[in-house]
Amino acid sequence: MMSAIQMSGIELMLFTDVDDDAGETLRNHAGQFDPIALLNHRPARLDPLEEARGMGFGMGEAICVHAHPNQHQAHDRFGAPTSMQGQGPEAAKAALASGQAKALLVLHERSPDVEALLNIARRQGVPVHEVTQRDLWRMAHPGEDALPEVLTLIGREPSAEDLDSMLARGGTVLCLDGVAYAGNIGFSVRTAEVAGATGVVLAMDEAITGRMWKDIRHSSMQATRFIPVLQSNIEATVAAAQQAGFRIMVIEDVGDHDLQEVDLTGDVLMIVGAESDGVSQTALDAADVVVRLPMHGFVPSYNLQVAVACACVEAARQRS
Picture 1 (cartoon, one colour):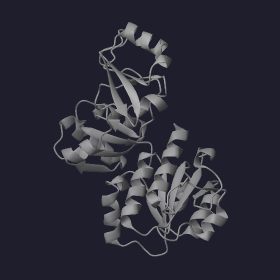
Picture 2 (cartoon, rainbow, N blue to C red; picture 1 turned 90 degrees about the vertical axis):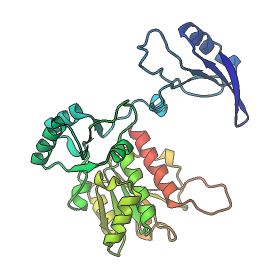
Picture 3 (cartoon, rainbow, N blue to C red; picture 1 turned 135 degrees about the vertical axis):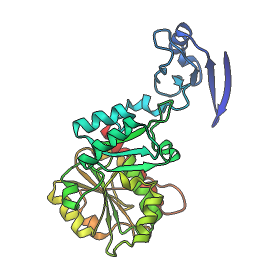
Picture 4 (spheres, one colour; picture 1 turned 180 degrees about the horizontal axis):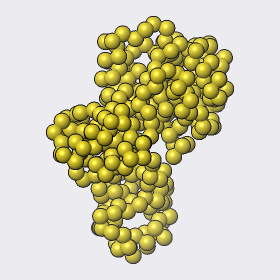
């Protein structure tokens, strides 16, 4: 079946219930059409439970739109990502056996098999977080039809004794230079965690109060359970990062590089500045590269959450 819809002034041709022969014909002649989408494509060579894989998107190119509501189409474009989350008892058992289990999320009410795994985790010193069914559902990666009984954090240590021990692990570290609002900090922590960062440094002179930590945890969607978040000052942070061999990237409107031009693989400290004052001079002086995000509107700057998201997503993309 063929139909057409308008998307931002572009006519998208939709073909539903497409078999192998018809799909191949459409791909071979895709240049003669506007962008094409194949809905509910079920190639005969694939198991009917498997999803048709995507082929990119562009003018005159065919794309496959997933029928499964829980499947992320972005996985097709960038390849299957390496996840720090294991789902189900078998994944937890394997991670505990290999020493890669770093935290477990389980329901308050659980099966004897899961309870046995928790006993192993506690003996190994692995943190166990008991959550509601809603919390477990919110944390579970898409892809499973049934809610897993247990979720396992794999690989990344969720805490660190100090800045030096966290930097010794290498990878991507996000530094918030003077950021004051708990909502912005919490969002940034969540973004860094999802992107697979090693940890987050809050470079600020005043000590964070207990109430502020609570607000940060809440606005991070409790991501603070799965990634180290340490407080320091900017001078100590850049000095420790340089000593550990990290490259330092700053995002500020005085930058002369595009984000995509910068190598974010390896050990990188990414610094984003405060809400009103931006990045400190200390950070700018220590930077190996200063990046400027494109801005074309009247308002002179983005919210810092945009800078954090752009940097973390680009780092994750380069590492995938």
